[in-house]
Length: 46
Length: 248
Image (cartoon, one colour):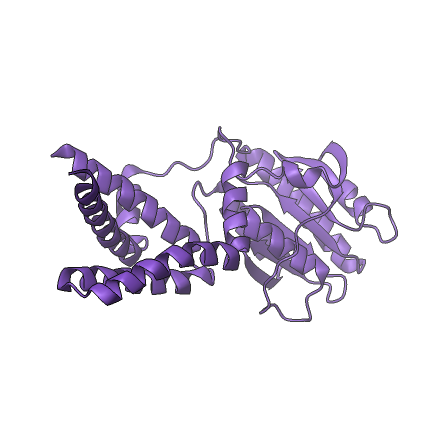
């Protein structure tokens, strides 16, 4: 018998409830890093 | 327009998984500090505070090397985990798992009664092949008699751990890395330290029978569950082994 199957609804619910703060901080950091790198690229290549 | 969204999404995924990896370790406090410094860095840049901006840029450049040196155990564990993942799901069938657990239950109970110690690691997703090399290959069907024989005091293989892969006893007398956790009580000996060390580097489930206290403990992902009854220990192992994701 294979491992227990996990439903899509469970996965979606789990995605929102599992470390929501960590996800929010990671998102803010990702946006900050993206804008910073974009700024650096503009500064050096244009 | 879709390119920035994709880039941010990939960055988000990578940053989230780095944070998730360090969550629960002492490195998370440093990570929090880095997040605060990053926020300050951007604020200084926006406000045009050049001196503070320059200082923080230099601090970041040095801190990359400093972090690698200070957190080399965590970095090593992380890289080891990445390399140990099975490419294809190497699960164990449920009826096979039930059989293995029944035999393990009998073996650990008898070992407790006979005042013998034991260290048994059950492979989950991360490969334990690297640890098998330090022991003696057995490749035998799991049975209570086999495990009890291995852990009989004064037998040649009773020191070290047994590794179980895909429902078989792969090897005995294996050496596991010792934990560097300073918070662990001194009442726990090398066997518990080895179990914790292995569980910090892999997602193996480790069962310990204490030679001194004659009790059962379970270790998973660096957490020690002590003084368990046979039934509780077996149900926890089953829960962990059948859960697709990491179960804590």
